[in-house]
Length: 184
Image (tube, rainbow, N blue to C red; front, top):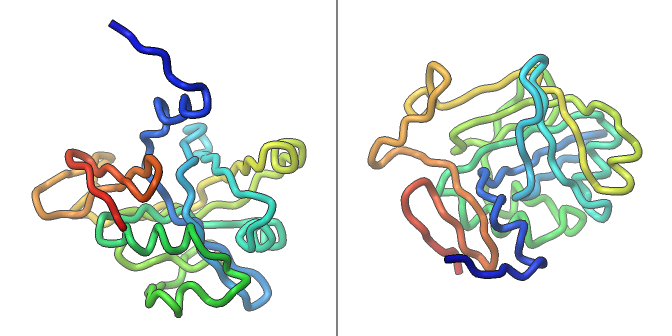
């Protein structure tokens, strides 16, 4: 048995990777945005891809600095994830407005967000055609971190009551490994 899927919704068949919070910084300005479209790209050196729209402040900061961080939020940050994905950093400091605590990255200037289960510090690998035409950024992962209670020795540990990555599917609805939930 099979059923046709509207092509405008076909991406949802593949969009099961974790939602990430892209943090950036340049010239004393910082920002954070949600991105549902990110993925690993390569092993050696480790690379990731993320879509960052031309209209965002994050895009301007990433282009100026040549770096960004992918923060992997857990369910406790779901409402903040919707909020940072729904408002522009040009309208104010999202970190301050939402009470998002940060800490310094080790290899890049972009801040890392407290309360996440993983963090990837990335330097942009310039691909101007992809960036301009498709809003697609490739980053080399120069440092990676995880909460050892949730990820260690190369594996996720989905213990009851512990953080799990969240996966955005549309309309304020997320899945976390195991259970679906919505943020209104």
